[in-house]
Image (cartoon, rainbow, N blue to C red; front, side, top):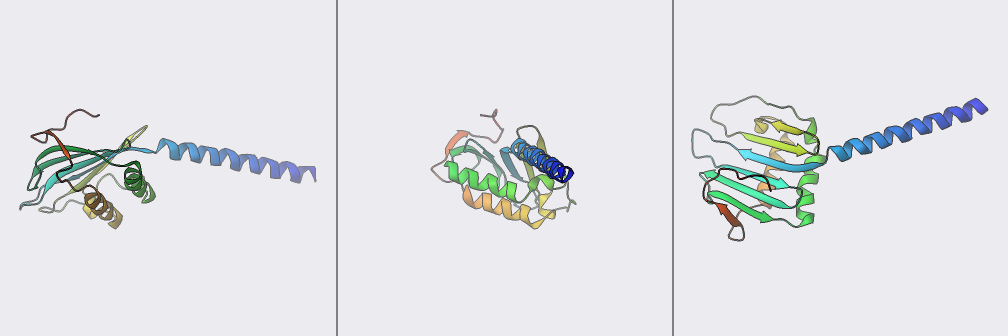
Length: 162
């Protein structure tokens, strides 16, 4: 009987320790910034970058074949920012490959995900899992540049991080 109780106690302790480690790992994988870059093609594909910081700041860099050229910034509300970053976490973007097959003349979608303790890059995401394209579309729809954005630079050379 004592062995059974000790075994149950030991297993409960192990599960508690494992649960604490998982929670710590999830916390350390918290996204600090999420950047999506749409690359060029042989035609008139829009070339731009959107970077969302966990502070709510969004930075848009329009390079070519876009309505707004230059660098623009806007502050998202906390719920808007959390929704977009949470979507990336729920899709388990951290499990994606670093690179997917390249297709000439197709505009690439590249992600750079900055965590507290590491940076992850995903190249040619349009050839990866469907959710990467869905996440890109959701972010594009959520952060459309308009006259409410503040222009901070005339060209799309990325200024220093905020």
